[in-house]
Image (tube, rainbow, N blue to C red; front, side):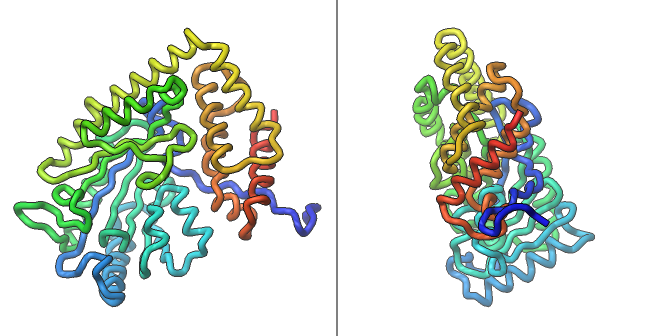
Length: 360
C-alpha cells in the first residue's frame, strides 16, 4: 500500500518512447528530428470544413478500414484513437507527442488519429484540415530516409483510396499553399547558440526570403520555447517532392547546422565563463527547484542539453533530459498524476519529477 497521503499526486508514469526525442542519428546535436507530412483528400467528398457530419463519418469509416487492415496497413501495430472518446488530457498529450496538431484537438468531430507503435514514427490524422494528414518522423537529420518511408506509405494508401487529384494542379487540398505535391517537410532544430548570440533573427529573415517558415515547438501558431524551432517549406505548387526535400536537405538545413555549431564554438571561445554560468545555473535549478512552470523547465532543459553537448555539464544523462522534455509538459504531467490538476499543483509535481530524475 502506498505511503503517500491521499491528497498527494502519484509518482509520474514513464511515457512510451517517441521518435523525435531519441536524440540519435545524423547531426542530432542540432537536428532533433525530421518530419514529412502529406495532405490527401478523398475524391468526391467535400473537405472536412465543408463536409456534413455524415460525410466526415464516411471518411472515418474508409480511413479506419484501410489503416487497420493487417494485410494492407501502412505501418506495424497501427492504433486507432477516436478523439470523440478521448479525455481532454489525452487529446493534449497527443499534441505534446507531436502526433496531432493543436488545431485538430479543437476541431469539429468526428476526428481520429492512427498511430504506428512502437516508436510513433508514423501517424495519420483523419478529418483535420484535410481528410488525411499522413506524417512520418525520424530522429536526427534524416529527410531522405523519411521521404522514402512515407512515399511507400502513400503508395499503399493510394492503391486502396481514390485521392482528389487534378492533372494540372496535383493533389487538391483545403489550404491553397498545400496544393500540388501536398507535402510539408520540416526539421525540429535546437538552436540555443544562435539564440544566445542574438543571431536567430538572421535565420528567420533568411528563411522568409527562401519562402520557408520558422515556427515554434508545436509548429504553426506556437512559440519557440526552449530554443526549439521548426523549419519547413511553405508552398508546394509547381515543385516536386524531391525538389523541396533536396533544397532543405542539401542546402538550407546544413547551413543552419553550421551556423549553430559556429555560434556554440564562438560562445566557448569568447564568452566561456558566461556560457558555463548559464548552463550550470540551469542544471542546478533543475536539481533544486521546488516550483517549475512548463516553459521554465523547457528553457532550463534546453540550456542543460547545450551544456552536456559542449562538455560543460557532467553527471547528467542526455537521454534523461530528452525524457523530461516530454514528461514536463502539462498533459503528460496530468496523465502521470492520473487526474486533472491545477497549475499550482503541476508546478510542484513537475519540480519533484525533475529533482528525482536528476538526483545524483
